[in-house]
Image 1: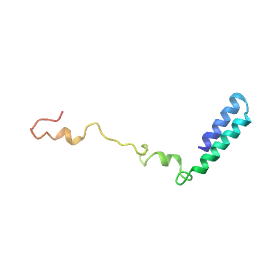
Image 2 (image 1 turned 90 degrees about the vertical axis):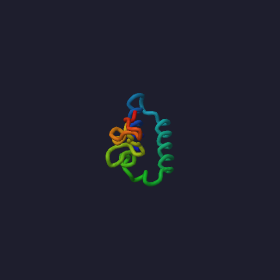
Image 3 (image 1 turned 135 degrees about the horizontal axis):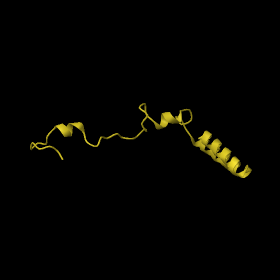
Image 4 (image 1 turned 180 degrees about the vertical axis):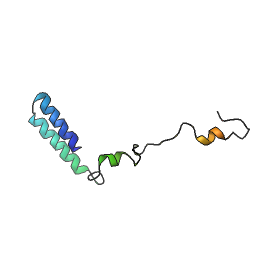
Length: 82
């Protein structure tokens, strides 16, 4: 988050000149956000929080469209499942 705010401040400075009031407001917001953050968010890398060990977003489910067993196992009446 700190990097994003710094980059935003730099873009603002380059695009329309330095705005001291905006800079102070953004710094105040950053300070408030930092005070509200708790572990593990303070010391962890953002990628470790967002992605699992396979690189997939945490909390996402990877449900296949059709399960492999349903394609090979017929229904009780002997017909294939739809």
